[in-house]
View 1 (cartoon, helix red, strand yellow):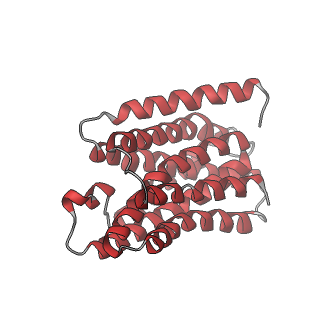
View 2 (cartoon, rainbow, N blue to C red):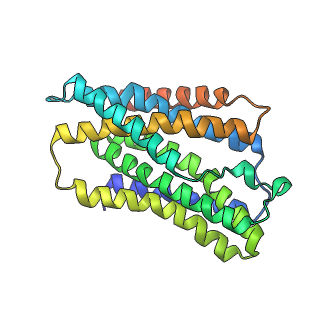
Length: 254
């Protein structure tokens, strides 16, 4: 099994961490969840704009126009999918505001997160295949924000059904969607070895990651904890990821 595929499996599997937190022990504070979402957004923004897009544009045979065009396609593709999905955010599912049909809301949330996770699995695999160093960063960012997503699915399902098994099952579906995206990318892209094709996909993935960070993670962090500033998590994520990239480059790791 290839390292990029293993990274995708680990990132998708992080959903189960949040799922377990949703059914046992004490729920993490909203402040911690909000900070982790901002932290993940910071990692994604730095990698997408400072590493992935420049690397795609620097690929021999890839001119700026198609490179930036693929980046915009990634942005627009994310927003088109996002607008087509039913939105049910974790803060809508807290015990203080429990909807009447909690089971239906939880299932809609599972569907939305699953469709949302699918391109993330592709992004993790494609990035790690092109640059293992960046792949580690993307996998870390995806895993960090998969934890509150797993919590967001498992908690409501557990509250609605009283079954820990069902809560883990539905949370697992959302995580499996990400793994499925990585596996399909592994199967399909194995025959597409052209550096230009990989660069085009990486530019589109960078667009998806930027849109995900700006449209989903940062606003969601603010909604979960209105009293906190998600920019702190974003800046911390950028700083940590930037420093780690410098250290890895200094060690000649790739």
